Amino acid sequence: MRITNEGHKAHLRIESLLHQWAEAVRHNETAAIWRNHHPSARIFDALPPFQYPDLQSYRDNWDSWQPPFIEPPLFEFIDLQIHAGDTVAFAHCVLHCKGILKDGRELDDRVRATFGFIHCEGRWLINHQHISLPVRVEAVDESTSDSRTGAL
Image 1 (cartoon, rainbow, N blue to C red):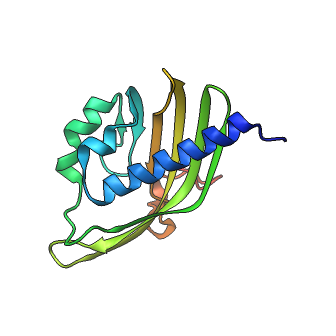
Image 2: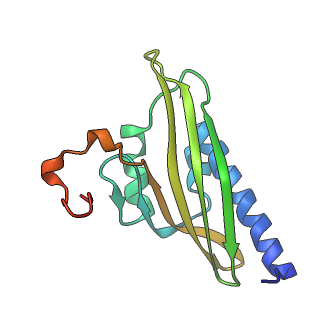
């Protein structure tokens, strides 16, 4: 597949947008976190309530679960892949999140992240965001799983 000049520009813009988002999250700069999200963005997160129907509902809950770190945590993309068309794009990666919480505990997680983008009024905006933790197999209660597949 040949990448066009416009596709390359979109890839670079989306990569920059995601790195800006990650820096804003690291420093808990809430205005910057939401800057490149579409108001109707559907967001799925690793922490309850797991699904937010729009950006405002996610913003309203942010402070209730955002962990307080002693200093800005590590929040880095591992194997970031971006695929962009003319009007839609998506990206996926693993996010490595690591830091010392204010109570002294260390957080060190790797989560899956997928982002969907729309090109709207000359800008790329996040319209879908999905962050999830892998299921720890030893934590699965066998009484709630499908015995044929192991699926919950």
